[in-house]
Length: 507
Ligand code: ZN
Image (cartoon, rainbow, N blue to C red; front, side, top):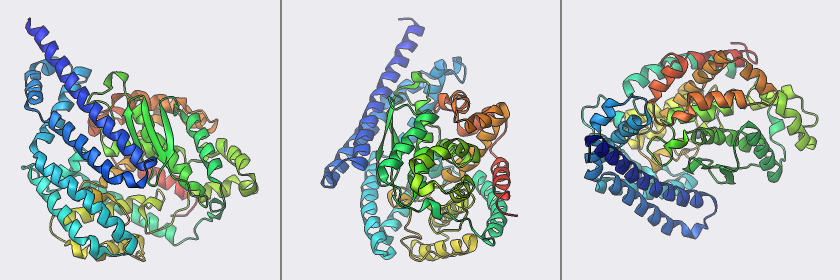
């Protein structure tokens, strides 16, 4: 065999191996989707076991030294190809994933995942009983395991860096802290100014809106935007999410509150944004490590772009409000578009992150980020977390949650994941969404005009070409630089907030 043929054979073998692993992970994703949508409750323990088995098989197959050897042998091939070629990118990303995976012993991963399942169960009960003390020992163990995980990656500047790297690769405490400090400094005076003024009346959203009509309208909207129901579907769940089993099979889920029109509507548009990203991957990335989204921040930027910058815009509703009124004539027939627009953009300091508007949302996220770091650094103890949480809410949002259930226990993340790296992606996503959208409008100002007519193809095509098709090929920082011509900054987001909310409130 010639050297070239040998290289080609090795590359083909690597692709086959990685594709098998991707198949196992997709099968696990189907099981997980089923668990969250249709599975009868009694199936939970068997399902947990099945998922753990698949996770273990895929992990073992991936950390096989033979894969490490193939990646090593393919180094010269990678170096000889252009950086952004599919083959070089595939080898580069697979190596990055491999290097990370082999550092953490399988037994540790298994122990961590068993603990996470137990912690989740304890959290669900503790939250229902408003009893933080019941979940406290579990959370202490999570903190310990998170610190231990971090220890597998020596030479990091901050203990949280390896945990942040898991979801927002390339981001570190050293670059996030100043970014978030700047963001907080800009946001706090805006939130204070808004809070001192009368808040918008959103009672029009809290009437009786039958579930079937809501679901039908949501379906109409996302189909019009570009969600292809031949390559995806939407189902109901408790906590909305997006998952996918291939580039051509993407699932979104939603929940419907009959007394709150905003819930299903905007969570559907949000999850659709995640789905369009995955559906827009280059088809040649199918079952390779290049498929998917590059980071939680970039993924969230795509959901927030559609949900907020488009879905909460005046232009969007110029087109869709008459249709919405047609569906809910009794409830909205007498409500003006102005009233509706102000209702969906109501700004209010609330204790719950997922209920937060786009002005206050980042404050919720940054509180969690700070607390994660303080816990990892040993500056606060788990038992003092509820008090620290409430103090942060008093400081930034001027309120104290009425209970720990809607305070420190409101989000599932720490109780089913790690402490560290769980939240920064939400704030990064908001910042990135504004920076990407600004670049899109600069490229073609017609995008905004088209949206008012209910045409989304200009924007959708721009996103496909500049972001979606690349999957995991470029790092978040590389993508940002390529698409917008500069590194991530808070300016487009703050500019957007000032312009939009400056029209409603004076600040
Ligand atoms: Zn999201």
